[in-house]
Length: 272
Image (cartoon, rainbow, N blue to C red; front, side):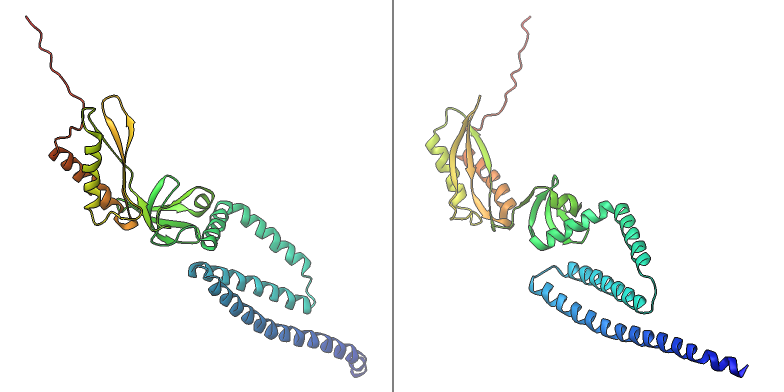
């Protein structure tokens, strides 16, 4: 028995040495790899902050990068230990493809969220119109964007559809034009009508002096002369100017004796 053990000892020593070196190499790869991952994560975070990427997107991308780097590190360690990694990588690829197909809609929304956060067509607090909805941007998430509607309702729009559709941002320029139309009778003096309406606009402190408001004849309709009234305001004063102008123009036209035509119903009595 002792002789046999002596004959096997060189092979045993060679085996222990081989696997021992592999194990030491795997441990070295683990520590060095973790140090490199930590360095890359810090560098990636600094780059995202420099590019002013949204904080929620930063966290998601950093988590995704961290997991991807750790998977590569584990594959490298398994390869160093002599484990066949080709089939392991194939299984990961197949699983990734299956998950991607199952979450196709979610991935589209994720991609849309990334595009929105990178190109920034709007930001939190902007008033936008998109996908048939209008509201103030409340929150920009990875998969959806939340708006607060004009009647204080919450509107949730998937980022995939949002990024692929038309977006009207009413807050980008800081000012908005209020488009109004008022009709008066054909008997009215056009010059007087313009002066009355312009007085209403210039007396409202929420109406901007620049760009200057305008009052012009728009159309000669069947029963009225219609005027295009175009005051400008700051974005946050848009609805104030809209409603105040509508009310005050009606009162001013009435005070000036200018008729606003409306349909009349004439009752015809049958003669007996």
